[in-house]
Length: 222
Image 1 (cartoon, rainbow, N blue to C red):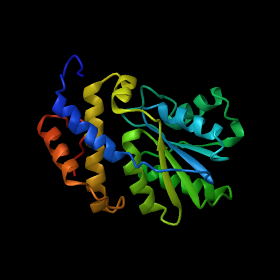
Image 2 (image 1 turned 180 degrees about the vertical axis):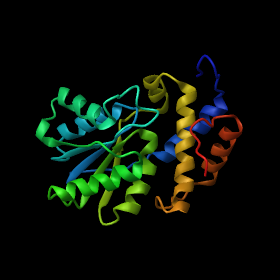
Image 3 (image 1 turned 30 degrees about the vertical axis):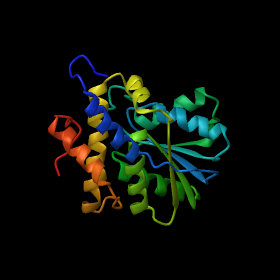
């Protein structure tokens, strides 16, 4: 598989799939007190949230997120605002959705939502985080650090890597994002932003090889 500007080799796809699989938490989940849809560029988060609501897994759904440089053009009124509208079209009742429109990063997604729920008298003990597939582990580690008293499970739209690439339409960008999220999983615990995760050696090797190959547009300066 490749895009027009950056052909991607079989070895590079194999390494990306290894990291992708590591990002997925593989949680089995049942009913929870509340679900939180983490804002991003990917409307699939809202689609997954609507499907899980209709399965009866939670009575209340919070969408959290303002804007970032990567989402402003796609969601000009804010990630959480656009996310809210999509499940309404899919039959989720308006009274089941709360919007948190100010978070600018994953830590704020968690802390702002926690505080918003407390302000309206909701103190959950179980929470389902719904995110992009490759963001499951980072969101789990972040919530575990910031909201340790809550039992966290993770979910995302059930897509294989190849299907996700087709949904985004930019293979190079997806590899960059998968690599960038692993950097955050590795580095954020050192800054106190998240719980440390045990990253297997083969995943580290794949990550370092993809960085050497130039999949670096979503890396951050640490």
